[in-house]
Image: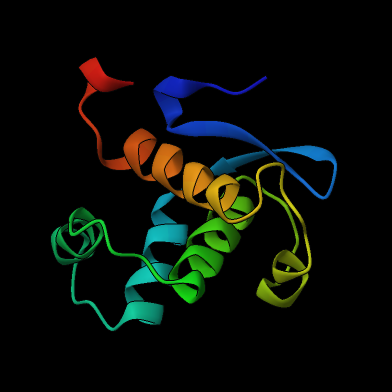
Length: 106
């Protein structure tokens, strides 16, 4: 069961439910992947609302690994989700909100 107070969400990928969480290690992974210098810069990048498919792949992969799933970005790329492209966008939006949103929004 997911714990929203820890920033966890649940998402179905490849027909299986997974827990995702952007832990400090996962955020450091994303800082490196996106060439950002700190978490504030990372949050500002995501606030634009413009996220590429590659961005979504990295965010979902980092969230899966942050929750303890041993999975590569290549493996994540092959996992279908309900709703297709909009399903991936929903996962990313919920994960970013769980991570960067205020406590009242979670």
